[in-house]
Image (cartoon, rainbow, N blue to C red):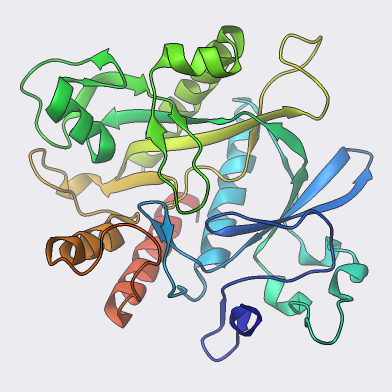
Length: 327
């Protein structure tokens, strides 16, 4: 794995290696623990150029993807705070704030150079993560569309009959999901099941915050010619605290409203009844679905190598999303 850590020829970062405790690897981000400061326990998140689809990490990196998504995620987190929608975990995105000791690894395990972290770093408050994905859907696509075709509902929420694929819903719906480990699939669950997992008062508050962010972000996207079809959020609570304790509110963690966690469509090309052109990973998903149809892949690890045109097409879509939304 070490030989894939920093692919300088491609300018891609597939994995990071730092002399910091608590290293964990998500589907696209590497996480480390940082010493506490006045904000309390902290975490360092490194946005790699890995790409996951159908909850499987592809072996082909997308050079520069991590920097693009880190930029957009930070922009949204600041935007969410400015609009008083909720607190976020974000403290810094400056690679200079990573302690020098992080680069002090043994010679046989070379640390990722600080320069490779530029634009990829998020330093945030370390939180107790709520083990439920908070998904909001304004349009009927993806697993929601499949659920509706089978049952006429999404996560137990009954919807009008006769809706087309990608139809706009009468109102946005909150459809929680379990958080999957790498290589496993997220699973849509009903609101009551989510309440059983983490408590009804907390889930009701998470639903309220998630819908508020979705409504506000949808208006922002619409003013820039984009539809926010659906999105998912991850929340946490301060370490050692519980919801219901005085002054304790959920904190938005990880990233938010990027093409990795959301479906964005161009408004001027929207037409229900079919798949939409998009600024998210749908471009990759459709390529992979073709492989599945051909019997060349079965949506389980390891993922297939991605051809150059899919890598470049993904980057082009991410760049346009940032240009429209945040610049």
